[in-house]
Image (cartoon, rainbow, N blue to C red; front, side, top):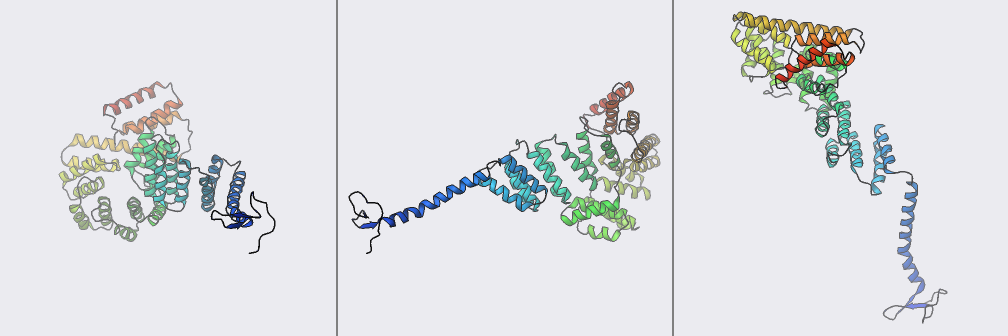
Length: 432
């Protein structure tokens, strides 16, 4: 064997070491084996040091801010890389989970969004806002079912998060879910957190169908994004009926269950639009009782056929089951009452219908005319008109807006006190 030249002399040895078995081992070989595991460790240490030098001034808060900016710019790949680098340092907190959820949302992985967000404790300061942002993003992408779930979760965690209620009102307005929209308005109105323009929308939503062409386009995108979105499909059909697109309405109706009460009501309406009265009555004969739209149509047909007692019963159920356009129900109900000899009740129903007509006309005038946001006299007038129409929560909102502009108006103070008493005396239940 050729001995290596040079190297340190070991104590009691020559130029080579001795193994435990007595065999002699070259020193250079020892050193080579020693360096084979020392150098990787040294390089790893250097890498960590260089990494921390590179990240020295990038604390987790600033990195999260940058990730948020990348997400908003729809640069999801870069956001994920940066977040991975942050997590590789050992940082793992609810803030990072929320950012993971935002990235998953941008990639249409909604179940993954929910998985990340559900890791975050309900008492974490930003979780409700995270659900709100999720809902807002889903709305922009016309995924209304997912948006509603996310916004409802935000409100479950934090009922004071008013933007979630406003987004739900927008969603329910498009889907013509007036009852659900009204519930959100009532929450915002007690205590009063509504602007005048929002109270106007509340009053309009009772009977208005928004621009049917624009609404149909939005709802069609919602149905395309989520074929199982029943509420958007129902609202789309209603807008198609308004636009006299009967073939399209029929095609969308075929996608809904034959036992769906809202779908049955729309099939009855389509049959009436096409003058198929017998088909409409056959559909109603098999339809469930108690649904407001079905009861209204059932009452109208019974009234047209001279079945006045049946018409009275159905129309009264429709009025109580609401919310629908109470004005038209009351007028038909007054006719049934008069035929049944209930003259006093008929006059009362007709008087309230007239009061609703005057209130609706005033709201439409206010919407179309320029106005000042500090017009206390106008708000008092709207409050009086709403009170005459027995729309007590709406009247209270207008009187509160008037007092906010003119706190010392004794007449408005008295009117508001009366409305509050009427609402409270009904156990907190507002009028429909």
